[in-house]
Image 1 (cartoon, rainbow, N blue to C red):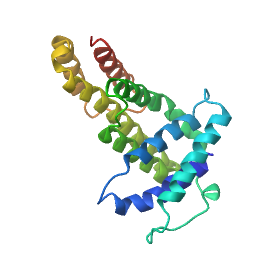
Image 2: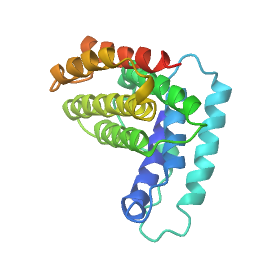
Image 3: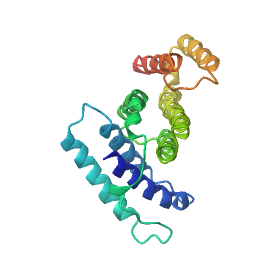
Image 4: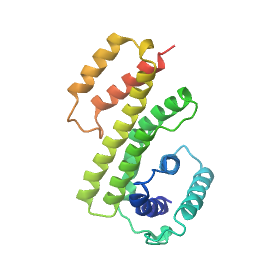
Length: 208
């Protein structure tokens, strides 16, 4: 299923590289995210995973129809490697997902382009990684972690901007300095980065 997912993402990316000059299809990027999250989660039923993948397959098939600059492939036979290692990224994906759900609840289910573009960039790195050597895979997955981390941060910071007057300014000041001090540290498997995200989550959920 993961192979087909990245085959579909490959097809979408080949079109989006051109179409994005006109407009990014944020709705499809969102569907890629929730489908991937479900596929690597042990908590989602196989029936639900198959339904999400089927829906994505139908949407991408329609999206790429009649596009002259697309190389058609059979997504079920998409050649990739290193798939077993992708489960390691689940914790960072979950961090992104929690931030996204909090944002959606506070913004009437309005999709936020900036964070979803970060997830698109993360998938692009993973795609490059799973089609190449182990060394390249590890390097690209580390970059994917960073994109999901930045996406989660963007969700929380956007909530803070919108509700700035209700935020505890002292806690925000301390958190911003802590975040500044972590610049240059990769998000992959890093306790400091996770603590920062958790503190942003606590800060925005305390808003009354």
